[in-house]
Amino acid sequence: MTRSPSWLILGGVMEYLILAVVIAVVAVAAISGLVISGRKKKRLPPPPPSSPTVTAPPAEPHVGEEAETPREEPRRTIEEVDLPGTEAPAAEAPAAAPPEVPPIEVPEPTAGRLVRLRARLSRSQTTLGKGLLTLLSREHLDDDTWEEIEDTLLTADVGVAPTEELVERLRERVKVLGTRSPDELRGLLREELLRLIGTEADRSVHTESGVGANGEEKPGVVMVVGVNGTGKTTTTGKLARVLVADGKSVVLGAADTFRAAAADQLQTWGERVGARTVRGPEAGDPASVAFDAVKEGIAESADVVLIDTAGRLHTKTGLMDELGKVKRVVEKHGAVDEVLLVLDATTGQNGLVQARVFAEVVDITGIVLTKLDGTAKGGIVVAVQRELKVPVKLVGLGEGADDLAPFEPEAFVDALIGG
Image 1 (cartoon, rainbow, N blue to C red):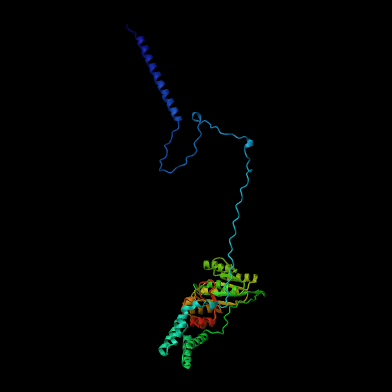
Image 2: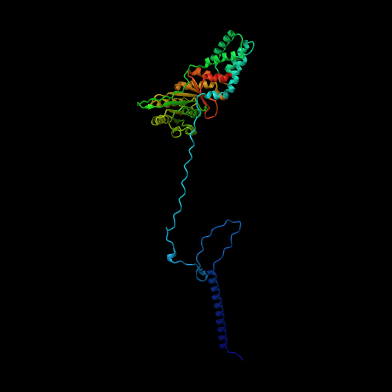
């Protein structure tokens, strides 16, 4: 059967409509898939094990289809909820215990201290005392022997003039003596050494209280001076022990403001015997600290004020002038009773140069010889007294706290010659 042209046209239109419907359905399905996949969240892969852990921010709450099912949790009524502030207060921490105060020491009595320290002079004894006795015991004392005696005295730092004087007197007395037994020689040498050292000088450390500039009672004032390295601050601390052992109350003035540890060191010495230390700021004015120390001593009715000054090199003119200023400022309260020069016995003749310069700046009234136990130059006692015309008042014979002793010429000579 042959179809007409109108049927053919109708069939083409129907195919076109069916094709359009199919395309529309496919398009709608594709768009729906894209929308659904867009609503799903992508999951990031976990970090590799070697990478450091990174704390992610809290996830956003899920909504719609992805919302989580709420978990069942126990619930409390308002009566069961405790109000703030109803808990018991926490127990307070126990207060820290106060620092333990070290007990105050009782220093060794000074009477006879040099005798007890006699063994410390063994090195000086070997060179000066025993050396001279050995030479004087020779059967024939010719010129060569007397020269050896002179060399022994000079090596021991007795000094040129005292050595010549001693040798001349020994030669005369040995000639008159004739026979020379060991005991006679020892007695002869003892007499001549005591004559050189001197037994008539006042060797006490003057610490008597007096009347101040304003009419009030003033404690005894002692200034301690010397160059760096002589043991000046240590000597000041040991001197405080000597005075406390003799029944005196002491105030310490830490006027060495140029050395950071000097004030701490002096305060430690003072605390051991119950002596108060007056100190100032580091690199402060030494004269001001010294002035305040004496003022404090007056207020406390102390017996003695010890002022430790900075260790100054004798070549530094400005620093030496400052030492004179310290003394002048202290004297506004009243007179300074003692100015003790600390010398290292091991420096020998160089110590005499230092002593001479200090004597030009302040009036030295006494000498403290330290490290006399570690030197073979015990003759420095004679030389320094001749140089300054002031006596040796104290000697240091060791590192112990009570190894500073009042100088006793008889005990010193006996230790030298073994008598």
